Length: 155
Image (cartoon, rainbow, N blue to C red):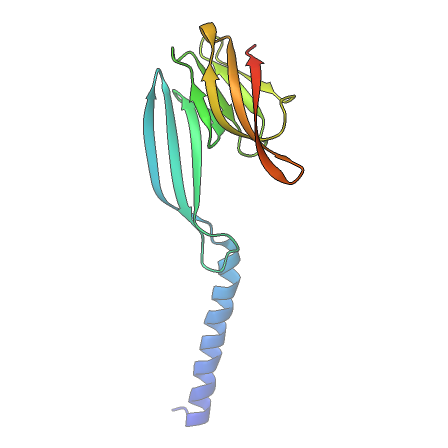
């Protein structure tokens, strides 16, 4: 039988070991997906939004990630996209690279447009026969947010 001092040491030792184990496991814990919502956009396109919450103690908070697909093909992780009125072309801005690209169903190919001005895609207006679009981009100019319009001929 343990005396009161030995008993207390045993409890503290067990507690310290479990806290150390917990401290070692926390950095390896991953974010958990809480919800995943799919939305049919028509013509074979669909979006998926995954909402995640991170393990307590992480530096960032709840996150939402949006993805665009054509059938089973992943096109981008993007928050802004537009599908042409005929459903044959999608225009989107990749969240990671910020590059605006188009996807043509007939060619099953993605064409990036890296030479466009830097900025966040706000809106897309489809023009005659879907060969051109007018983009509205939110940019920083002299420390102020400015919206610019840019016409783009799709390749």
